[in-house]
Length: 122
Image 1 (spheres, rainbow, N blue to C red):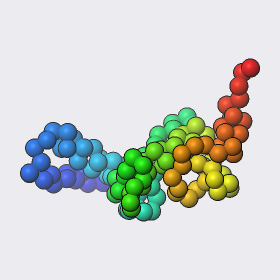
Image 2: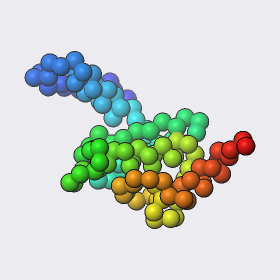
Image 3: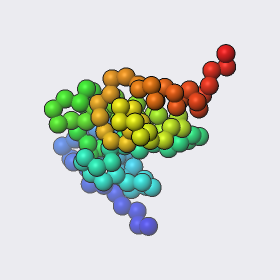
């Protein structure tokens, strides 16, 4: 594989933005499961023991999912479920249902399934 270097915008002088651009380029070059652009796969996570969570940079993220933006917290909660070992649920109200929705609380299905994976010691 050839080594390619990104062309950075010379107008960017903020070191944080430059680092973000370089890290974003590295992620795109070496990511084994690339994303598909806006409104496709929003994020993905790996099951334990790795549990990494990756978010698609092409999405319009928001903290609350206002207007035409994707609610970061809802997607993060869903992906955290995968990181903990949960698969998708067939219950439409569940955070682990495979279709995006804005969630404000866990469903009983989510609670039951995570408690089955991680039972109380009492």
